[in-house]
Length: 362
Image (cartoon, rainbow, N blue to C red):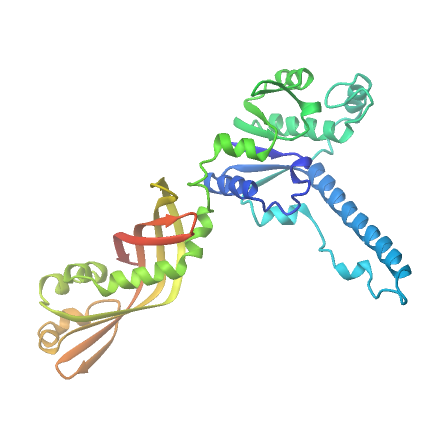
């Protein structure tokens, strides 16, 4: 699937940070779908936002001047003190959406556009308004045709008057626009939507896509580190033998006195494998992740150490041996790889109950 957003979608949503935008972007990122972004949509959005900012400055200047006349002394305030941010829609979106396809309108024939204006072919109106909408529409279709795009493509605009017909809840393209689609024999199936809200309601599971799967494990690094340390500290002899690739622990050493782990270089290569719904607002997340550097200190009986010293010293990850009276502390450096799963409350944004299905040292 690909999703196209028209200029009006961003009006008064300049930073695309409302809840429905977040759900849409999480959905696109999680599913590895493309956002289609017209160069003209970017230019229009930038222009409208900056124009409104200038209008606000002018209005504030007018009001300050008016207020100064009501005061004994001029008010010490200038509109420039507001410090409006520099605005560029492309910069806003590139930090929110992983896959963006830019659509150029430079190769659209002006002759074709003029002919459509003369004949009032949608999205042109009888008043010959619709030049930019026509460029956006024709370049959108050209992109689909030239790139041989297949599958579903959502076209989202709230410009119902120039683009859509509706019968009850059924939304279709205007006759002229449907004719444009049919004449090109496109492989893509274009579906119209009036707003992001409608698209999200129809296509997006609000629980499963309430977070970005590429980012959530990074956000939960502290939880994953603590839970991994807890697992390591409670390993059985068999578990130790497995992670160290050392049968001496699983088959010969009878007693482990203590285990202390310390992850001093954290999360790397996290990957969410699947997300499944649970009751209420929770999901079950299956994931893979690595802990770059883990210091693992295992304490065993000194007699057993001496009995199996050759096999213990042959363990590749061993870097230090400390004899302490009746005990021996063995220190290992690991790069720990974990396949596991945990619950995540999407409303409270809280993880819990990490279960380690498989763990090994790389």
